[in-house]
Image (tube, rainbow, N blue to C red; front, side, top):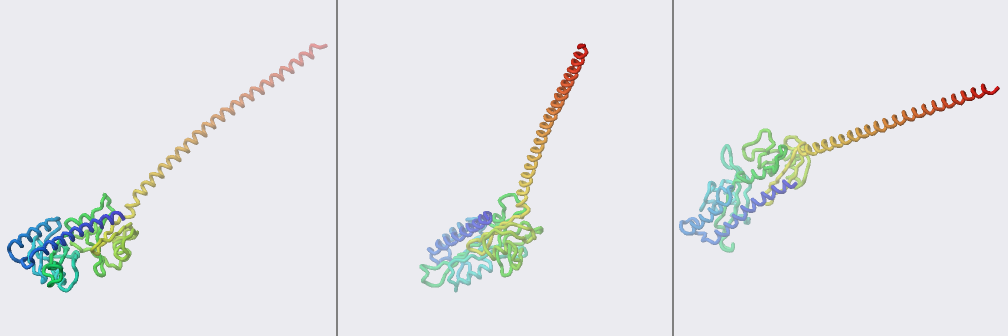
Length: 322
């Protein structure tokens, strides 16, 4: 449970950092004359500096943009200076939405080998928000595979039968945001590994359906595993850390075997010592018995000689008397 919770907290911090930086950029832009955003001049230079600072914050940031409510890019920096279609759709939806902040979940962009992208979207209201409709929208685009997913999927120790996966629900499917490391044929295309949610016995499906817990069951390989899950705050993701029961029990069995061998050795040594003691006592007893027999034999012989001597003396006396 500790590994799952630690990785979930790591994702929480990652999301919080990008959220705070996007909102801070929005607040800074709010103080500028919004009608000058698309114009050259001092306002544009200030925006360039602000956007450049945000873009350089972490290596996983691929673009930062300021958009008009109709989706037109007023200013943008980075490889994703123009947000993708899914992000633009969310920006356009802000015209009629009271949402003040939105995280666009992981999605694919590009061709045959699509990339993964997320976006943090913050609308900027002029003044105190009582004036005209929103005039600009700040969008920070990130690639979670550059750092976050790689860090989350790393097991803290060398354990071949263990893995950490990040999952979410996508309709009737369970989708793996990070590729499962225990697959025989590892998927290289982002978000390509899916399983039906009808496989409710899967630890990942159990996490989505029933929340955080420690469980025992069969994973996607049909292998018996122990698992622990923890939810992520802000997005519908779950971190699932799992270990093969055989790998987890191996050290226990090794220790049990070592203990059994130690106990067996102690028993054998004890039996050997008892046998030695018994043989020593038996030898002493046999020696004592033989000595007693010899003493009794000598005593009996001595009495026989006394009796014979007495008889001899008696006969001698009778012969001497007339």
